[in-house]
Image (tube, rainbow, N blue to C red; front, side):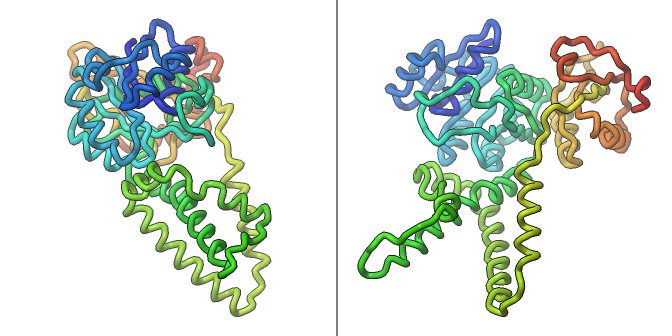
Amino acid sequence: MRIALIGVGLIGGSVGLAARARLDDVRVVGWDPSQATLATAVSVGAIDETAPTLEAAVAEADLVLVAAPMGQMPAVIQQVLRAAPENCAVTDVGSVKRPVIDAAGDDGRLVAGHPLAGSESAGVHHARADLFDGATWYLVPHERSHGTRFEQVHRFVSQIGARPTTIDAATHDRLMATVSHLPHVLANVLVEQVGEARGDDQAVPATGPSFRDVTRVAGANPTLWAGIYSANRDALAGQLDRVIARLSDIRDRIQANEDLTTWQADTADLRRLIVDKALTGDELVELRTVVPNRPGAIAELALAFAKEGVNIADLSVAPLPGGATGMVALWCPLEQSGAALALLAELGIEVVGGERLDDARRERGAAQVTLEDEGVV
């Protein structure tokens, strides 16, 4: 397998390290605008070889991963798609998905992505092979994403240690605006406000741990974050409108001397629910179905599952004789199997087989317990 990394900073470099450590018979080629970055990527073992141009890097690739700054991502995606082979899967790691998908048009080779992983430190010299272990990696196919390319990216993400989760572009961008981009804006504003409290003497005001915790991300990577704000401006503006309305409401309640004990307690409970929620150690169920062999069929199925909150932990696709249909095997958490079966029935897709697995069995390919035996179907 030949993997091309377009951009070999922290994320691209970590992908390269993970792929070289965990995949058999893999060759990783890298291209980056910075020759110094490329040299470092080779020295730390993130890539096997460098390419003189982007086009040369992707020319014979089986999979291309683009790790460019968000402001440059759409143009780079188009450049990659013009040069990549027809049977190549193309994905990215940008934190905003709609501009990336729009740039690809109807090209079925693109399966957009976004790993929820990173580090306080930037640069390929901080790359780690375990950076994605257990991390959610959003996969964002579009309506024409080819099923084989989706399977290819899904498997690769799993192989380097991440947990692929399918989501549609609008939901992804709104979610990121809420949980990632908005906190950066609020941190910047709070720092500005405290800075104004210095007064004319410019003395540095005393700050406590609350201020330090809340503003940890303030001013992070100015060029990178300016590009993110611009790329996700509509979703971010919508979330800012909601925050402004909530702040206005809580200001009125404070001004009215309302008892906010319940509000404080409810928020604490909600934060625990949000932050502490984990999906590790799921017992998995395999469902096998037959779908039409046409562009976008697997993407539609994956997005329908995502809309209902059912995660596809793994999947495989194989064409059936005649080529008109394909067999899809997908794995989802046992607790979500009922919802998965109901959704497939609603879509008119028949379940033609299935098995119940735990992670160890799935990794060995030795599932032995049928869904019928367990009363699931």
